[in-house]
Amino acid sequence: MGIDPNYRQNRQVVGEHEGHKIYGPIGPPGKLGIHGTIVGVDFDLCIADGSCINACPVNVFQWFDTPSHPASEKKADPINEKSCIFCMACVNVCPVAAIDVKPP
Ligand code: SF4
Image (cartoon, rainbow, N blue to C red; front, side, top):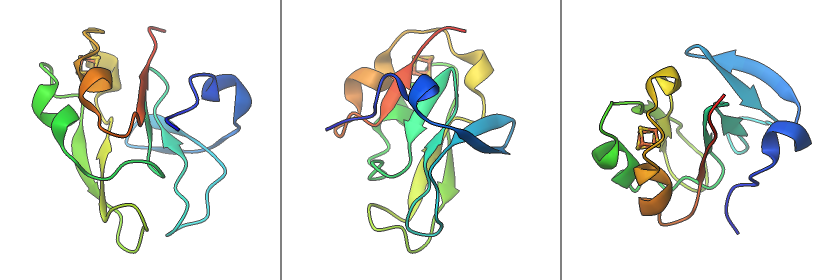
């Protein structure tokens, strides 16, 4: 199962990181929640495939190291979500459906 497309309503904001919100629950290092509001990445699903980073035409993502997370030791962090042009390339290439994009 992929990211909950209604996470913005269903989850609580528990913090901020690199200018975007973090939606919980979190419990580092094993549980990291969802990063971003315009471009949401479920860090607990992300396997660091990297397709989204390669696909994004406006460099929304940057690797973020997450040592000891069970799914992968780095995540595609939407540090530049405000630049998103809603092409949906990242959503379409993610092998684990960890990304949800929604215009503000
Ligand atoms: S929808 Fe397109 S522009 Fe937005 S983050 Fe994904 S790949 Fe980048």
